[in-house]
Image (tube, rainbow, N blue to C red; front, side):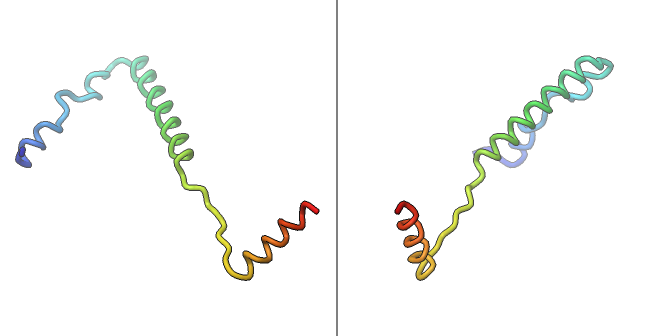
Length: 74
């Protein structure tokens, strides 16, 4: 099992992303565009995974709703 120090060392980036793209505006714009697209995809996935609210009825309300639906076809 790795120690906390070993975990911290492995999680550090070997380079600075900002430093890598310094002075390259077209690359920065492309990177920003790609990040925006990924954010949109993540937002869409989160929306799809959101639980659907449902209405739960019990007791008298359930019986009344059943009668209403049963007589709607007639």
